[in-house]
Image (cartoon, rainbow, N blue to C red; front, side, top):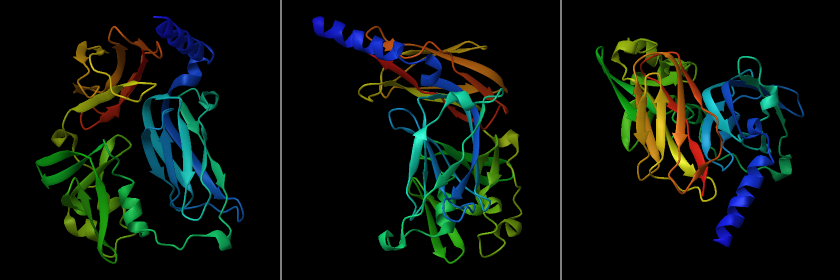
Length: 311
């Protein structure tokens, strides 16, 4: 009993020692530029990864030819960190500061990264630009759609993904051990699903998108309902927590986290949705905040909101 009270007092002290807004805060979009510290020129193909406080990868992006990146978040982040990395450059990582949010909950985060000296560089054995760029659209746990015909598209939950350059300038996507034609792959972009071969047309050897005759964006009518989902996690062990109650308000829906700590809601309409969590009896929740998720489109969305608890 004494040990339990001691741990509880430490947890309370840790939580009260930090301002609530520094622990969890709402972000709609993160944008920025990445610059070479020596040449002051923008850098293309820099990887930007956003992690939660316990190291879970939440979002990724990659800079374009102007060194610019944009990552829609639309949700709450818990003690987030951002990391900039590129082959033969030193990695740069730091905590995201809620004080730089604007009135619309958007954040601009730019970075200057330092190249590794020539004598210390690792030989360039990286995969090609075309495969690396394609893989940035396929994050584990997210989804994409495979166009079957004019009236049907299958939603695929990504467990593993690899871009295969079968010939110079030609790629296939290998997702969950199945192969997909890039002209039929639609990946999430600004709340819609955009054709992958259209996005990558400047890198592909042939005009694959133009030859396919496929639309740039999938029609909303063939998308599945939007999903709000997440996991309830023990903040100290990183283990999933079963038996938590998760509530979606307006319209009211209720779920109980399963043995993997997961929950999910299907949503058919656009709007603002509040999600709250009541932990199992032996746990307390980290924050009393109620995440608000903004859904611009009633179908096709995939919105993640995790919750953290402590014993």
